[in-house]
Image 1 (cartoon, rainbow, N blue to C red):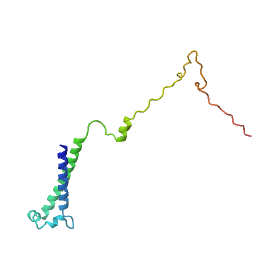
Image 2: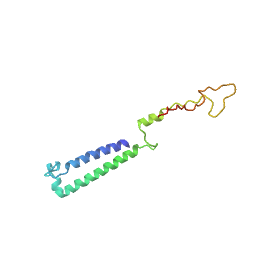
Image 3: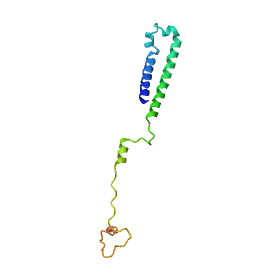
Image 4: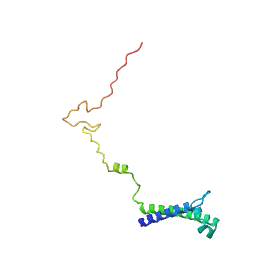
Amino acid sequence: MYTTLVILILVVCFLLALVVLAQNPKGGGISSQFSAGGAASMMGVKRTGDLLEKLTWGFAIGLVVLSLGSHMLTSTGGGPVRSVNQQRAMETKLPAPAAPTGPAPGASAPAGTSTTPADQPTAPTVIPEPAKN
């Protein structure tokens, strides 16, 4: 289905390019090369411009609709789309924080063990400044 839709989009793009090139801008264009051939004499000059304009709008709208349709076919409903960096970050496991080895804060030390000053919190040391005269 998707391949058929892509081929249809390419055909519409090709036809849209032909119709745009066939239009007669202010100073002439590819349609002026074929004016004696048949389209201008069969439908008249004014009618050819109307037909080309309607074809242009039709192909442009068709291209937008087909493009949105192809997006609907390929979109996944599995949640938000993530970038490669986000996917790698989700896959990377962070190491678990190290558990404290000392006694819990506020708990007394078990019998038979001594606490060292490194285990106990210390108050900040205040150094007095010399007095100024």
